[in-house]
Image (cartoon, protein in one colour):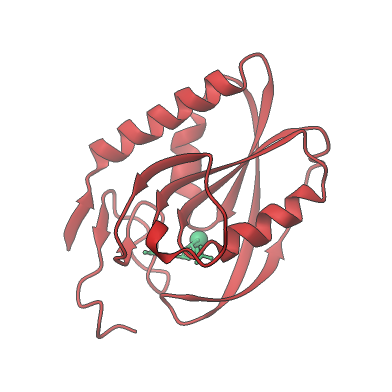
Length: 174
Ligand code: IMP
Ligand code: MG
Protein backbone atom coordinates (compact mmCIF):
# COMPACT_ATOMS: atom_id res chain seq x y z
CA UNK A 1 0.00 0.00 0.00
CA UNK A 2 1.12 3.53 -0.69
CA UNK A 3 2.19 5.41 2.43
CA UNK A 4 0.58 8.83 2.74
CA UNK A 5 1.84 9.70 6.23
CA UNK A 6 4.82 7.81 7.62
CA UNK A 7 4.96 7.03 11.34
CA UNK A 8 7.64 9.69 12.01
CA UNK A 9 5.43 12.45 10.61
CA UNK A 10 2.46 11.17 12.59
CA UNK A 11 4.55 11.24 15.78
CA UNK A 12 5.63 14.84 15.08
CA UNK A 13 2.05 15.97 14.51
CA UNK A 14 0.85 14.22 17.65
CA UNK A 15 3.64 15.86 19.68
CA UNK A 16 2.71 19.27 18.27
CA UNK A 17 -0.96 18.82 19.18
CA UNK A 18 0.05 17.63 22.65
CA UNK A 19 2.07 20.81 23.16
CA UNK A 20 -0.82 22.98 21.95
CA UNK A 21 -3.25 21.32 24.36
CA UNK A 22 -0.74 21.54 27.21
CA UNK A 23 -0.34 25.28 26.59
CA UNK A 24 -4.06 25.97 26.08
CA UNK A 25 -5.07 24.27 29.34
CA UNK A 26 -2.03 25.15 31.46
CA UNK A 27 -2.78 24.71 35.15
CA UNK A 28 -6.06 22.89 34.45
CA UNK A 29 -7.16 19.30 34.02
CA UNK A 30 -8.57 17.73 30.86
CA UNK A 31 -10.78 14.76 30.00
CA UNK A 32 -9.79 13.05 26.76
CA UNK A 33 -12.73 11.31 25.13
CA UNK A 34 -11.76 8.87 22.40
CA UNK A 35 -14.18 7.79 19.71
CA UNK A 36 -13.85 4.03 19.41
CA UNK A 37 -12.32 2.34 17.69
CA UNK A 38 -10.51 4.56 15.20
CA UNK A 39 -9.09 7.04 17.71
CA UNK A 40 -7.49 4.47 20.01
CA UNK A 41 -3.92 4.85 18.67
CA UNK A 42 -4.17 8.62 18.41
CA UNK A 43 -5.55 8.96 21.94
CA UNK A 44 -2.92 6.74 23.50
CA UNK A 45 -0.04 8.56 21.78
CA UNK A 46 -1.55 12.02 22.28
CA UNK A 47 -2.19 11.43 25.99
CA UNK A 48 1.53 10.83 26.51
CA UNK A 49 2.32 14.19 24.90
CA UNK A 50 0.00 16.14 27.18
CA UNK A 51 1.66 17.36 30.34
CA UNK A 52 -1.47 18.02 32.35
CA UNK A 53 -3.65 16.23 34.86
CA UNK A 54 -5.68 14.08 32.44
CA UNK A 55 -8.33 11.36 32.51
CA UNK A 56 -9.73 9.21 29.68
CA UNK A 57 -13.17 8.18 28.64
CA UNK A 58 -14.48 6.52 25.48
CA UNK A 59 -17.59 6.67 23.37
CA UNK A 60 -18.59 4.57 20.41
CA UNK A 61 -20.86 5.33 17.52
CA UNK A 62 -22.26 3.42 14.63
CA UNK A 63 -23.05 5.21 11.41
CA UNK A 64 -25.03 3.65 8.66
CA UNK A 65 -23.91 3.70 5.07
CA UNK A 66 -21.36 1.92 2.94
CA UNK A 67 -18.03 0.73 4.33
CA UNK A 68 -16.40 3.95 3.15
CA UNK A 69 -19.04 6.56 3.67
CA UNK A 70 -21.34 7.41 6.54
CA UNK A 71 -24.95 8.01 5.55
CA UNK A 72 -25.28 10.72 8.15
CA UNK A 73 -27.35 8.65 10.53
CA UNK A 74 -25.24 8.33 13.64
CA UNK A 75 -26.18 6.23 16.63
CA UNK A 76 -24.46 6.23 20.00
CA UNK A 77 -23.59 2.70 21.05
CA UNK A 78 -21.41 3.47 24.06
CA UNK A 79 -21.74 6.58 26.20
CA UNK A 80 -19.24 8.21 28.56
CA UNK A 81 -19.04 6.79 32.06
CA UNK A 82 -17.98 9.91 33.98
CA UNK A 83 -19.57 13.28 34.62
CA UNK A 84 -18.37 15.99 32.23
CA UNK A 85 -19.97 18.93 33.97
CA UNK A 86 -17.49 21.81 34.27
CA UNK A 87 -14.71 19.66 32.79
CA UNK A 88 -12.35 20.60 29.96
CA UNK A 89 -13.33 17.99 27.40
CA UNK A 90 -11.24 17.12 24.37
CA UNK A 91 -13.01 14.91 21.90
CA UNK A 92 -10.36 12.82 20.16
CA UNK A 93 -11.23 11.48 16.70
CA UNK A 94 -9.24 9.81 13.94
CA UNK A 95 -10.66 11.74 11.00
CA UNK A 96 -13.05 14.56 10.26
CA UNK A 97 -14.68 13.71 6.94
CA UNK A 98 -18.24 14.85 6.25
CA UNK A 99 -18.37 16.10 9.83
CA UNK A 100 -21.67 14.42 10.57
CA UNK A 101 -20.25 12.16 13.29
CA UNK A 102 -18.51 14.97 15.15
CA UNK A 103 -21.49 17.29 14.82
CA UNK A 104 -23.64 14.63 16.44
CA UNK A 105 -21.08 13.98 19.20
CA UNK A 106 -20.46 17.65 19.88
CA UNK A 107 -24.18 18.30 20.35
CA UNK A 108 -24.48 15.28 22.60
CA UNK A 109 -21.50 16.26 24.76
CA UNK A 110 -22.59 19.89 25.05
CA UNK A 111 -25.67 18.62 26.89
CA UNK A 112 -23.29 17.53 29.69
CA UNK A 113 -22.37 21.21 30.28
CA UNK A 114 -18.60 20.91 30.03
CA UNK A 115 -16.51 23.95 30.87
CA UNK A 116 -14.81 23.71 27.46
CA UNK A 117 -15.29 21.32 24.55
CA UNK A 118 -12.53 21.04 21.97
CA UNK A 119 -12.07 18.67 19.06
CA UNK A 120 -8.76 17.03 18.19
CA UNK A 121 -8.80 15.24 14.84
CA UNK A 122 -5.65 13.61 13.54
CA UNK A 123 -6.85 13.90 9.93
CA UNK A 124 -9.13 16.34 8.18
CA UNK A 125 -10.64 15.94 4.72
CA UNK A 126 -12.06 19.46 4.30
CA UNK A 127 -13.25 18.86 0.75
CA UNK A 128 -15.84 16.38 2.00
CA UNK A 129 -17.51 18.50 4.65
CA UNK A 130 -21.33 18.33 4.70
CA UNK A 131 -21.78 19.90 8.12
CA UNK A 132 -20.23 23.15 9.36
CA UNK A 133 -17.77 21.88 11.92
CA UNK A 134 -14.04 22.33 12.35
CA UNK A 135 -11.53 20.74 14.64
CA UNK A 136 -9.61 22.88 17.13
CA UNK A 137 -6.52 20.69 16.78
CA UNK A 138 -5.70 19.02 13.46
CA UNK A 139 -2.77 16.80 12.58
CA UNK A 140 -3.00 16.87 8.79
CA UNK A 141 -5.34 18.05 6.09
CA UNK A 142 -5.50 15.31 3.49
CA UNK A 143 -7.02 15.00 0.02
CA UNK A 144 -10.18 13.04 -0.62
CA UNK A 145 -8.61 9.58 -0.55
CA UNK A 146 -9.65 6.65 1.61
CA UNK A 147 -6.91 6.00 4.14
CA UNK A 148 -6.21 3.20 6.60
CA UNK A 149 -3.75 2.53 9.39
CA UNK A 150 -2.91 4.04 12.80
CA UNK A 151 -6.41 3.14 13.99
CA UNK A 152 -8.28 3.80 10.74
CA UNK A 153 -9.94 0.79 9.17
CA UNK A 154 -11.57 -0.52 6.08
CA UNK A 155 -14.17 -3.11 7.18
CA UNK A 156 -12.30 -3.39 10.52
CA UNK A 157 -8.97 -4.26 8.90
CA UNK A 158 -5.65 -2.39 8.74
CA UNK A 159 -6.07 -0.52 12.05
CA UNK A 160 -2.72 -1.94 13.18
CA UNK A 161 -0.62 -0.45 10.37
CA UNK A 162 1.94 1.94 11.85
CA UNK A 163 1.81 4.33 8.86
CA UNK A 164 -1.27 5.91 7.33
CA UNK A 165 -1.73 4.46 3.85
CA UNK A 166 -4.00 5.02 0.89
CA UNK A 167 -6.20 2.00 0.36
CA UNK A 168 -5.42 0.52 -3.03
CA UNK A 169 -8.06 -0.44 -5.58
CA UNK A 170 -10.40 2.06 -4.02
CA UNK A 171 -12.89 1.69 -6.86
CA UNK A 172 -13.41 -2.04 -6.50
CA UNK A 173 -13.87 -2.36 -2.76
CA UNK A 174 -17.04 -0.28 -2.37
P1 IMP B 1 -17.87 11.71 9.09
O1 IMP B 1 -19.11 11.59 9.92
O2 IMP B 1 -18.16 11.60 7.63
O3 IMP B 1 -17.01 12.91 9.42
O4 IMP B 1 -17.08 10.38 9.31
C1 IMP B 1 -16.13 10.20 10.23
C2 IMP B 1 -15.86 8.72 10.31
O5 IMP B 1 -15.83 8.10 9.02
C3 IMP B 1 -14.51 8.50 10.90
O6 IMP B 1 -14.60 8.37 12.29
C4 IMP B 1 -14.07 7.22 10.24
O7 IMP B 1 -14.53 6.14 11.00
C5 IMP B 1 -14.77 7.20 8.92
N1 IMP B 1 -13.87 7.62 7.82
C6 IMP B 1 -13.96 8.72 7.07
N2 IMP B 1 -12.97 8.78 6.15
C7 IMP B 1 -12.22 7.68 6.36
C8 IMP B 1 -11.02 7.17 5.74
O8 IMP B 1 -10.44 7.74 4.80
N3 IMP B 1 -10.56 6.01 6.23
C9 IMP B 1 -11.15 5.35 7.26
N4 IMP B 1 -12.25 5.79 7.87
C10 IMP B 1 -12.79 6.95 7.43
MG1 MG C 1 -14.12 6.50 13.46
